[in-house]
Length: 111
Length: 111
Image: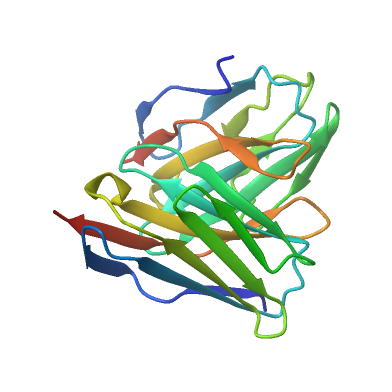
């Protein structure tokens, strides 16, 4: 069966450092891989999308890599700030538009 | 643009009661979906629709019904509420670029 695993439930880092989150998947051939941010009591908010034929995507302090051979995506937050504290969700999208989500990693950035 | 609007934000039901969770989007998106989010499990797809008049089941459809009479609206009906349906429910619509826009959620408690 399809499985999406995010490396850890929680990640605590010091302000200014880089946070690196991992998303691994099995039994899946996604057309897209997406990352969302979710704050407590709110809906997920889209951050970045990377296609199967792309290796890397950047947006401001965010970077995503996608390795279809390893079946893995890495999500980096550089120069992290306390405002980056949230839960980050990895989601895979096949040709049928249906999103499958990982359980999420909660990032806490200490000032 | 309001985006995706969900009502109500909170609801308490007694076992066996029925209710409808409302979802509306003003972005003219064809694809819409409903997810439930439970602690530690990530978001799971309940039902989805690729356009007006077309709906299909997701990963956890039992106990739920949907209809799509217009592009804008995609209500989710709980037929006979059970404590196992206590969850946070999110409605989403998909852009042409592939990312999904989520509503703010409905927190449902079944007692």
